[in-house]
Length: 343
Ligand code: 5GP
Ligand code: MN
Image 1: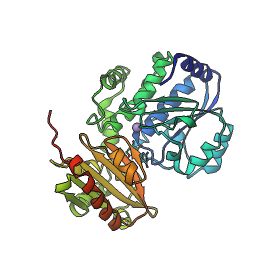
Image 2: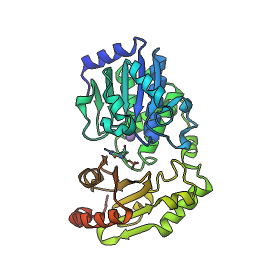
Image 3: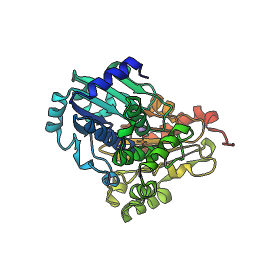
């Protein structure tokens, strides 16, 4: 958290026409894109020269958000991105807790010597890498934190509809449409203020969630019918998709987003996992409901982390090896996974 004197320092920094680069994590999600755009609109209003930068592509279903076309993608424009970082006075780090989450951008950002400001809601922020840390795990999303950050700097009144839409996108996607990480009043207080600004929650939901291609919906059907394993005794279910599965359905970035939630919708399943084979690496996506911490599981065994109920990870094993190892690891978590959610 930030002391009053730090808040004042940041406020002074941000009103001096600085060159600012806003960065977010690899495989950017709705909160990464939404919080970056919200910060972008805000910092530009303060008169700064602002750029947004992410390591790799983001799903097309966020491109309706104004100014997504201005987001620099490092994998596609690496020379330009390096120039921006070299010339930056300030780097914002949004929606990630440690620089290694920048993947291909990691080393370049770490080598910079300018002021770094973190705004994030993940566990265990790498505080030593930042000059200022606005970090808490008690917040639905980085979008919500951006709203609080702007308010803390005394600028709540300059949050406009466009900024609000970006913040709302962060909140709605990181809470699974208000189905998890959504038990704190502040989330709804801010949401209510955003709706008052004219943010159309109904339309935004449609723009994000009702935009499947036929291939994407059929891939989901294939995944659930042919690629899902349920371990009843472990209260766990998983979906695995290999390269050919993805190629057969003409996979586009974002096509597997949200898929990990389907196994979790089964009664008695407390943890779900999605395994996708991409670029000779397995990407893992974990979700849980209730007390089981997928953050702890992924940190301990799968090279990743995240939040208690939503985490990512990676592996260089084959899909079969990974599934075998997972089953054996979960024997040690059998008791932790065995619970019923009651009110
Ligand atoms: P997802 O499953 O949607 O990719 O990620 C779920 C959550 O875990 C997100 O908040 C994301 O930022 C975080 N996350 C995803 N992959 C990793 C990882 O490799 N390391 C860490 N520390 N967090 C991750
Ligand atoms: Mn987030």
